[in-house]
Amino acid sequence: IKHINMNTIEDIKNIISQAEKHNTDALRSFLFTNPEKPLIAVGSGGMAGVAQFVSLLYGAMSGLGRAMTPLEMNSLSDDTLSRVKILLLSKGGHNNDIEFAAKRCLAVNPSGTACMCLYSGEKNKLRPLFAKSGASQRDFRFDCEVHDGFVSEGSPLMYLALFAKALG
Image 1 (cartoon, rainbow, N blue to C red):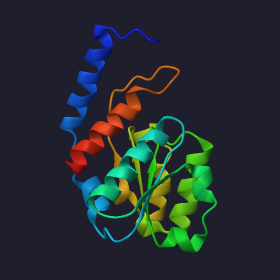
Image 2: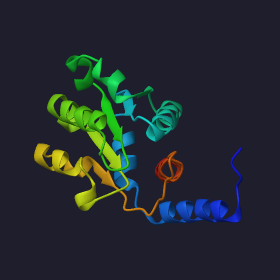
Image 3: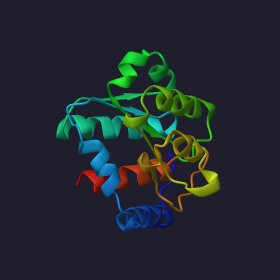
Image 4: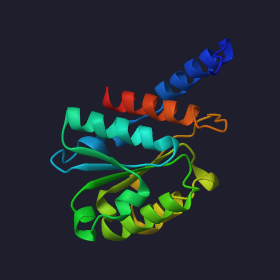
């Protein structure tokens, strides 16, 4: 059992405070424009729970939402991917699975693919892929100071706070 101390509570307050300062209008617009289109939220590791959260919220608020890992998403046909909205979730796009998913989704459905990262600039490996495909307006970047240990805890909480703001 992990001991929760006052520093952890302060970290949570800091994460929520940072999320409140970000403009989430573009993310909200992506989610609620064409609500009849199903949403596939793609994340692995610490982002898998975030993908579940956003897909459930999307389903409750507008349309059909489904969470998938990049591997599960890769099992879908190009035709299926071309008819949905896809939201890729990654702290910075540094894993091969999410990078491959981004390349495939941008090739098949560039106008319906978005990504959400906590890094911008050089630290974000997905940013150049979105810029090259002409989809940079759907590259949602939030520069956040989040520290994760061996198990990703801070990043998922930041995503949950940002989605709560965007959808609230």
